[in-house]
Length: 316
Image (cartoon, rainbow, N blue to C red):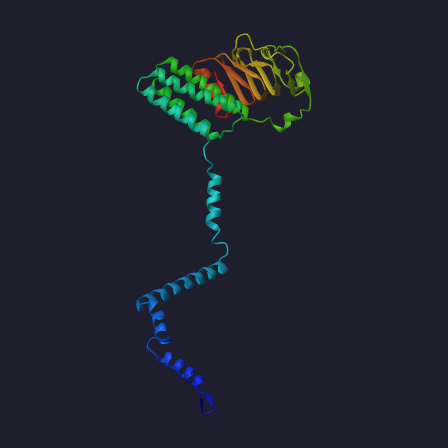
């Protein structure tokens, strides 16, 4: 059928589409259902979101402005903390073990447990010996602290010679560690005149041994046995013989310190003996030396002086 020049079927199809569109079950309803599935955000939540966005934006703007105006401010705390860490390095574990062993020894000595106190001191001495073998480095305040702990331990049982003996041996180990850390003075590394000897050198009473008397400033005894004396000590082991050694470097072999006035002398790789007699050290250095000191107060005094890095001491 023709209706107004158009087929009737086409018009019916158009009317049907319009009717479907306008029906309650048509497109409008479907869109309404879809919109209803997404709940609307409450008004208070919208305000909170805006406030958070403003806060974040303000923080970013503030940090950016501060970084432009003060570029070094952010890195300053890290640099300060790094500097503090460099000034205060961590204490090595072996030094802490020495301190804890001596602390325990002091408490045991105060409680009257002398044997346990001796064990604590011996353990600390063994740790120091191992540190020397491993070429461990220790600062001067380490030696100061250990000597102080030893003094307190001995003071806790002052009338006990056994405890004093163990403490003296500990002091000798500390002196050897200190000597192992010493380096030879620059003038001794390239001596101006080296004099080699292969037998002990005798020094007469009331005499002075110096570069002018031996023809050099470096007395090399490294070819001698390690137990042989470089200089024969005075028979009396006292100042009565008036023997002086000045402005020399002695290397190798062994040397007894008793009875001699030592002035501006450096020992390198020498085994030093002290038998408890009179000794005078003035500007004397010990480089990589070992020590065999007599037990007792005088030996403890000399070992303590060396351990503390003191270059001058007089024991009359």
